[in-house]
Length: 225
Ligand SMILES: *Cc1c(COP(=O)(O)O)cnc(C)c1O
Image 1 (cartoon, rainbow, N blue to C red):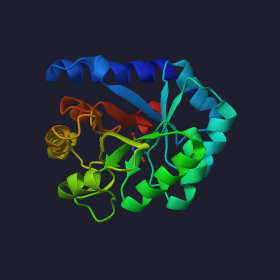
Image 2: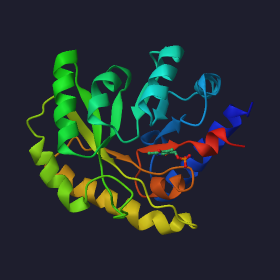
Image 3: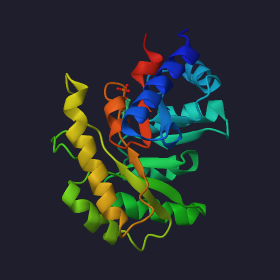
Image 4: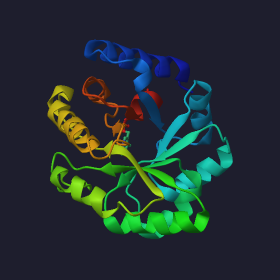
């Protein structure tokens, strides 16, 4: 098995250095370990290395894992694309949905929250780069969407999420992260609860942190040798 504490500490040190460069506090950045590549044992090892936020992108494997781990102190983040007909199943297991990308999904989240007697924290997914293969709103559509879901009172939109295109050079992702941060800042005037920016993965988290990420989603860097 890999040395998870070393891996986790190394990412934490790189986050701290990126914060230092940007004049930010390291406590303002939460590392979400994406455990989609590994099973229950490795996931437990990551938890023992001091990680309390875990990310999964597939409904059934996530629920199986969460049920087996059964650790209430963990906050599970749903980071994959979410089918409307899976909302009912997913809701009891997750603290935050990072992939709110259409009105019909919001509507169903509200409906199931009503049934289950809860609310749900969500991030609106934004397709900043405009790649066809990525889901999410065009940056110009987000304001309208937030107005559209204004009455869905059990959906608490806490921020924005994006995935940068895969680049050979992480520096090339900077404009994407910068744009998401500017968008959040401009929307915050009318939506003060938009505090989070979920951006940055293994290849580009340092640039994302420099540009204001509050949640980074790192998988392969932690669990692959
Ligand atoms: C898999 C995945 C990640 C983690 O990617 P790594 O490059 O392995 O760090 C982050 N975000 C989303 C949405 C993912 O699907």
